[in-house]
Image 1 (cartoon, rainbow, N blue to C red):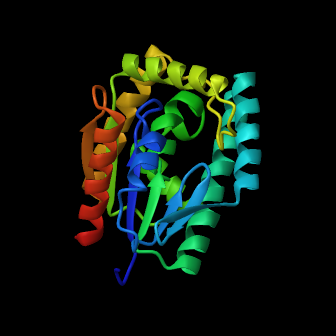
Image 2 (cartoon, rainbow, N blue to C red):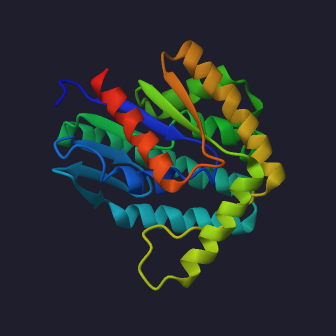
Length: 243
């Protein structure tokens, strides 16, 4: 459809429903829209069909991340997150973008925003102790991913996010079907942790909008249905591709 890929991300605290909204929107997009989706796991979408890629590596990184979370060792957790960031934005994104030549590179989470927002919580003695400009510059030196053309920030009240996370974990435990990425509860997924991280998101997004040429759109999902969030996702993506 387009000559060059448009780079778009959806970001926001845990519990905002990024993955859920994607599952709704992928069936609502034009079939001729070729997409590289960077997520956990990543996928490519051609002719309206989503094919997951490198699932084995993603699952191994998830297991390492879960193990790190259970230790409550922040350096271990930071290392596990660092490996995932490098895998997604240093390796997967350029490889699949070059191979597929998509119209859209869409990431569920952002290679700059999310690590920067979570750094003060998990990496307070390293990345989190420097200012936002320094965090962004450090991440760019690591993976070199292009700044997004557009970023959709899914905002959510922390208490509602906590409730949604608990419901998702309980729901997955009852399912017999294979879950590609089972949810476990992270250390920060409580009222205090999510409130703190939400505040960091606001600061980081303000910076990338002012200095990184990224257009940021905020959407509050606190009282939004899955369908409405998916429809907003669709409209946002189509706007980005058509711009």
